[in-house]
Amino acid sequence: MLHNALQRLLQSILVLLGCALMIFIMLRIIPGNPIAVLMGEHADTAVIERMTAELGLDQPVLIQFFRYIGGALRGDFGTSYSLGKPVSALIASAFVNTLILALMAALFAWVLGVISGIIAAVKKNSILDHLFMGASLLGVSMPVFMTAMLLQYFLSFRLKWFPIAGTDSLAGFLLPAVALGWNSAGSVARLVRSTLLEILEEDYIDTARAKGRGQLGVLVLHALRNAMLPVITMMAIQLSGLLSGAVITETIFAINGIGRLAVQAISARDIPLLQGTVLFSAAIVIIGNFIADSLYNVLDPRIRRRG
Amino acid sequence: MSGKTLEIRHLNTSFFTQKGEVGAAKDICLEVRPGQIVGIVGESGCGKSVTARSVMGLVKYPGRVVSGEILLNGTRITGISKKEACSLRGSEVSMIFQEPMTSLNPVIKVGRQVEEVLLIHKKITKKEAKKEAAKILEAVGISDVASRMECYPHQLSGGLRQRVMIAMAMICSPSLLIADEPTTALDVTVEAQILRLMKKLCEAGTSILLISHNLGVIAQVCDYVYVMYAGRIVEQGETFTLFDHPAHPYTRGLLGAAKSLRSDAGLLKTIPGVVPNLLHLPAGCSFSPRCDSCMDLCRSEMPDMLPAGEKGHLTRCWRS
Ligand SMILES: Nc1ncnc2c1ncn2[C@@H]1O[C@H](COP(=O)(O)OP(=O)(O)O)[C@@H](O)[C@H]1O
Ligand SMILES: [Mg+2]
Image (cartoon, rainbow over all chains, first blue to last red; front, side, top):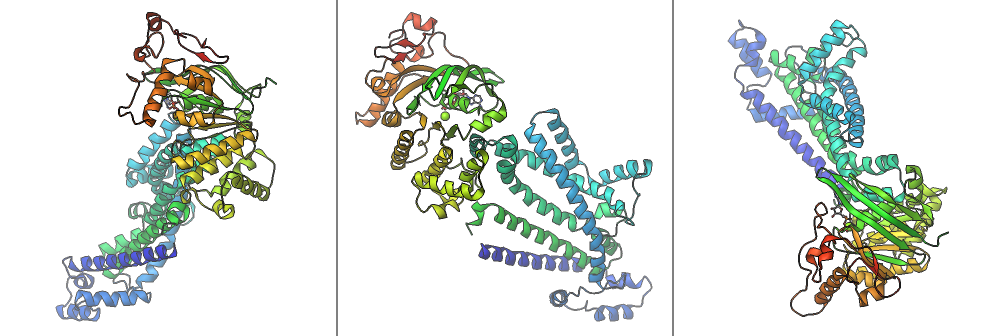
């Protein structure tokens, strides 16, 4: 099992390195000299060249890459051109907001998704089932900007229950978290329902009933434990998606998170900052996948012993 | 006390499908006496499992018991509350299923799954439950119990898993054990071991209702046999009587097919025709279209169970 985990860890690191290289190369083949943009329209070509050399941008891409990785290993992701601060510090302060938003969104999505999924499965074909599944269909198919703007318009602007934007208080995170989590809630509800329905047909559920377990005991002790296996995997992947920055939600609700930072970096052609945020998001997703895999391994004995 | 472990009176269980009501068990009357192993035999789809599940109160949706009475040790168990039914299942009457590979929960250690039955029905500590579980697992012939209890189901062979199922079913010493094709998924040597174990359990005081489509299995262990066809009992009698003097053409057909399978007569003997669709049963006797000695009466009227010679030997055939 340990060997298995080590192998997957190594794989994750390789994927991360590959990602970094791709990001690096892509940012360098887009046309236009970022230094020229940085210095403004009327900058002297000599000055631009000197700056380019100073920042090491005249070196071959691969050399630049290894320098970058070397710095990254020491926690140095360069300095933002546009904000003049270390990229690592900018990401760290943005991540706090993204983290709060992501955790609240996940909590909302999972509690709602799991509970409505269970009810829908147990009361299959009832009004509640149809209601929940209709809502979850809306959840998975409504684009997040639409949910976000509808919530913002009705609950903040019209009813004034929530602040329109900003993160002065925790309440400011509530609406964005709901908007962001709505999608995940829908997919979790659907997955919980379908896996649970499948599992309730399994032979070992009959065995549990034959033992004298009541409806609730069968559901909680025998069905849910098995049904949660794929659901937990989905959750880990969802969480890593949420943590890697919600560009749209953060922009609509003016939350200074990772997503918004990346957007700022793009508009300012701030290559170190963009590189840093994109790499950070990629790392979060890769870590999330690693955790999802590991969880599955821990929770399912059939896989656990095989490694 | 009526002196009967199980008594089924005129049981009707149907599935209410979109195409209509499927009568899977019709007018079933059946008895299991203390210390007996009673068999139900018949082709696949004839309603054996539905009958067993009706006793357990575990008929699958969209099926349900429509009418009839089931008595366990003289007490009516049809129409009791869900809670009462739960307290009987696993303690007074228990059931083991055909597929040992899928009948155990894959994510729970087998020891825990056996202990669970005790923890549901008895007020005992986990530690005591564990001790009891080890005892019963040893009694059903599992060696190296301590380490096996820590295994997950997928780490055990089919035969071992079925023993675990039996241990689980027996741990509360129920008065009735229902075994639905307990050896169908196992190979022949393991089958023989499991059948021997069931005989032992019966001698220790548990009555058994054994379901099989295999006449050989029934002949080896049963005291009394019911033959089912298309949802009905068509013949019943002591095992020896029934095997030596089958009274129903269907039973004769089954026995003939089984015999030709064992001998090397070359051609396999089969019963001509196919099992009828339960939604569109023929008028009269359900077996009449396949019967080699069918009369006009058979095509118009379903016979009752009629005496066929020996005492306790009944058959649903006009020619008896
Ligand atoms: N879920 C179901 N829906 C509809 N009909 C069913 C269902 N389960 C069983 N039946 C009907 O009940 C009949 C008997 O099934 P069963 O008792 O499982 O047969 P067996 O004798 O092989 O155990 C089947 O032929 C089928 O017509
Ligand atoms: Mg069956």
